[in-house]
Every structure is written in C-alpha cells, then in structure tokens.
Length: 498
Ligand code: LFR
Image (cartoon, rainbow, N blue to C red; front, side, top):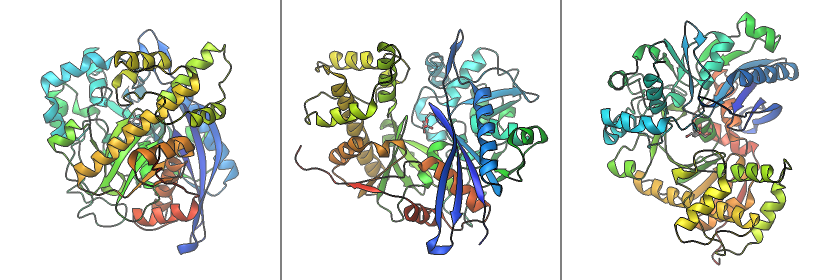
C-alpha cells in the first residue's frame, strides 16, 4: 500500500500537542504508531471583559509543532486539527474582530433566558438535539449580538476551522464541531443511505438551521459552508509554509470536535458498548445510527452530537477531571507554587475505604466556572448535609467516586433512552490512565471497563486523515480494528464487595 505520515494538532483545554501518526504494514498486520513531537500549554487569559483563549499563541505553538512534525516526517502528507467544541472567532474581511472567549466565561448566564424567551428549550431540542449547556455557541452568540459585535461580523469560524483557515485560507465549518453550536439541524442522522466510507448522503447530512439563526438575531451570512470529516481543505499558503517549512502536506478536515475524534478510536467492533471519553470532561454515552430526540432524552440532559461518518454521539456531559485539575491548581497556589504530587495523592486516595467519604453531584453546573474548586465542593457537601473530606486524598477520592457515580448513571440512562443494551464500558482518553477512576467506574456501573487508548483523540484525528489519503481503508469498524491491534488495553472487573 501507500506509505506516509500525518500530523494531528490536538488542542485541549489545558494543553495542546502535535502528534505524528504513521501506518505500517497492510491488511490485518497493519498497525498505527503515534509519536508526540510537540506539547505546549494552553492557559486562558482573564481580561476586563472576560475569560479568553490566547488563540494567537495556540496558532504559533501549533505551527512550531507542525514544523517539528515536518522535520521528523519528510513524507508528511496530511495535517488535521481538533479542539474542544463550541468556541469560535468572529471575522470581518478576514480580520479577527476580537479575542475569542473561553466557554467557561460567565457572560452567557444572562444570554440563556433571552434566547429561551425567543425559542423555548423544548423547541430548541427538537431542532438541534443538544443537551442544555449554558456555553453552547448560540448562547455565546447572543451575548455578541447584545454587545453589537454580530453586526460587524461576516464570518464565524470554530477554533479548529480558524487554525485551518490561517494555514490554508479555506473558510469552512467541519460538521462534527458545527453540531455543537446549536445552529445545526439535528436532521435524521447520516448513517442510513450513506453511500461509501466517509461519505454522508447529501439528503440526510445535517445543515445549518438558518431559520433558527434568523429568529435569534444571528445573521446567517456568518455561517460558513459545511464539510464532512475527511474533506481535503488545501495546501499551506505561502505565509504558513514559511512557518511550517518544506512540506507537501495538505490540511484535511478531521472530526474537529475532539470528542468526535476520540470516539473514532473506541476499541470496539461489536454493538453493545458505552464509552466514556475521559479528560477535562467525561463524555458518557453510546453511538447510534440516528438521533434520539425524545422529551425523556431532553430531560435527562442527553445530547445528539454529530459523529464521523454520520454516526450520532448520544451522550451526556459529566464534569470530568476538571474537578481534579482545578483542585490541584488551587493546592499549588496554596503551597506557594509547588506542584502537588498527583501520583502520591492518587495512591493515598486508593487507600481510603469505599464509602468512607461523601459524594457530591458531579453533574452540578456550580462546578463549571474556574477557581476555588475544593471550597466549592465543600460548600456543596455542607449545603446537602454531608461531611466534608478532611484531607486532600479524601477529597480526591470523593471527586473520583462522584465522577464514577455520575458516569454510571449516564451509561445506564444512555442504554435506556437509546434502547441499546450496554455490556461493556470503554474509557478512552487521559482518564483511562487513572486506575482508581477506572476501577470505581467498573464498580459503579457493575460492568467490565476496558481502559485505553489514552491518546484516543490524536489517534482518531490521524485515522480519519490516513483514510482520506488512502493509507487505510474501510468503515469506522475497520478503523477501530486497527486501534485494537495497535493499543494496549486494560480490563477492570466490577468488585462485588465494597
Ligand atoms: C471535551 C469537549 C466536550 C465539550 C466541551 C466544551 O474536550 O469538547 O465534548 O462539551 O469540551 O467544548
């Protein structure tokens, strides 16, 4: 077969990375190898007008990482970009109008009731299929409208699409991430009638809900043409090539929502699985052929996000390891900048007897904003007449147990609401390395938990590019078989005695 390497730019809420992926061998002996060539911090900046992403730094760091990729892989054929969802830049005539906001900025609190006054929550769900989250793009855009900024804008680009635009000049919206804006019609799902691999039949592919945009005072002109993951976006512009160096690589749209890329890499080829994409958030759910847009699903807080190849990601956002990383950040501050030893904390947390610490609701939006996490968890427990953990290891144990409980609830809800029985839970992403979290999740669900791959997002980004370039072939199940062959997975069985 053909040979070649691709580079995945994967931006996370706390760090970004550039990974070179290579497929070796062919057929059943094919393996995919990842090599991280750059890692950089992503720290939001709070200014007078709110919390922002430093997107220029992210772009510079991504370009430097791509230059490293082009050096280690002279045969680099593709570049794909993914990041967290919902956030965007507004442009006019190609110029960014302001520094993009970070989704944890609190300005949307005032926007939510304004939007719901125009379009009720149940109608919104029927149209876009999304779980209510205060930070969904359409609420952020309402804040921009109120501020008068939308009048100036002629383009909205989601963050991965913004970076792809700066690299190539293309102005598009990749569908999986567009599905998190609230402005994409939920449609009927793309899986039925989808002709070939990586193709979504035109008649079923989701399109912008321009009518909804107009009702919300969002000018439809800002919505770019939609493309599916696997679409080639173009070569580097001369300006970008000066930064990246000598490469013939083409930029390719991947599942640019990080969770969509992660779900590509769930190591399962048979039905009957749930997944937890475990990182800053825990995205917990099942893959379906069609959206599930029932009143029960809406009330249970289940979202229908667009997956690669027209699949639906029917899932619920659980607060995730954000609860832990924000606690660590607070302890680091308390300790005068000394980084807490996470390994030692987790070991001590594993020694805390089951049931010895109280749990809190890891689904409560009270934990969304940054800052003071241990204090906010203690306040929640006190308000609910539950004892507050006395030590840091006890708090870590409470966080992980609470996450496991919330995730187990979402796994069983996903099965019930979708009508798809679940026999095994796959934990992918960074959290799959956290043995205590995996074991507690097995205990709480009563199901076997298969942990790994930890680098699922970068892997899904790589695989979709590799397929678009003809380096690998087949449907999602074929890609997942390649993930299984290439990964080390660990199984955790539920403990019956607690
Ligand atoms: C995970 C993620 C979630 C999304 C949240 C905010 O990184 O992309 O899927 O709900 O971040 O964008």
